[in-house]
Length: 471
Image (cartoon, rainbow, N blue to C red; front, side, top):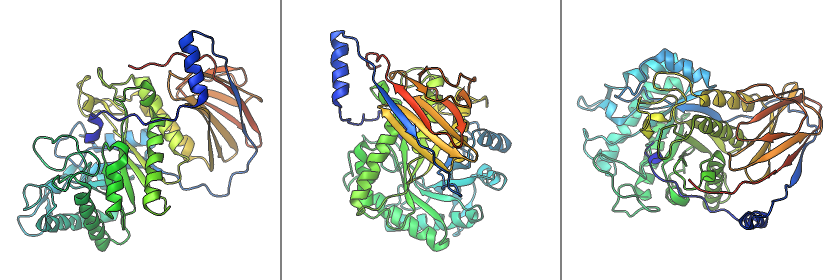
């Protein structure tokens, strides 16, 4: 989770001729003509069985020694249920085990061990963390350090196997692996003299995956937890060094709240980055798709630099779920995080939660729930982007069709009109709306329901474009 403190690098985009024309017209003060496109969803029967959907969950903190506001097991279960989560991600650190008796024994993380049997959610357990109590444990790049690390992993599997968790190897190794002051940001794969280098993590990952699967051959083990990684160079390097050879997938973290352009502080920017990662991995792995797990993504609602208004953050969470649901290789996404970890309204780290520090829901809690419910109930999902940053999603479920429309943010204006009226219409997490008149479209998704046999046609219009700028 360290990666969210850093500025993200804007993704290079191809500037289309129409965008250049619009920009020139705005510069010269000329009116910009609206453009209209039809989005048509032909009648289509839903298959007998729904596709396997991605796992959706949230980061929590019962496994750390610091409570960070996670004092109540019951409250955590209630909040996970409230957002529609089916999973949670937590830490079971190496430091929680005592090696002095020879056999590793669990001496910390009592709250997590109490949470596991009571919470009927799929656990994702992040394993690792430098351990200064054992030889070679900061970090375990030596043979001796690796031996202790393997013993820790075997003890973790023994203590948690009954809960069928996903195991994740280390957290943001490419950013910080030990204790003490942080080193300057590493570029690319890193030099071998730097313990954060890809070659060292790949060895850790291969050893850990083999150790866990030897103890439990049916375990799901993912590697990476890649922190901020410009152009995915470190992720590509660990793949070339074999980190994914026996693993079940790659985990990554996505943040963009500090991007220079407002139009890059969006769910779409994250999705584009994921697609670029998948393309790069296909090249390395001879065309083979890679299962990707987004184990942290989010937008803080802190005051000041890089913080977001509550509504903008909420819309982004919904957008991410709706847009990513059509990626077949995205196996799961865990938002960061379930609740604020402190009461300071300015501190960014304190303000990533869907709930406040005193357990009150932010708007994002509702938007996560409604977006997750929509995609989980669907047997067919079809996503269209008729104009950049304008989205139309059709979901077919038992007895009905649902269409959701939205823009990536207030920098993109559009309007829409259905050719045939819907049965019902509403704003996501909001009031009902008319089913047929032309209407403006914004970042808050609009949701319409149609008869299961209807052919759906909607005219999408760019309307009047505002001047683009930065904040």
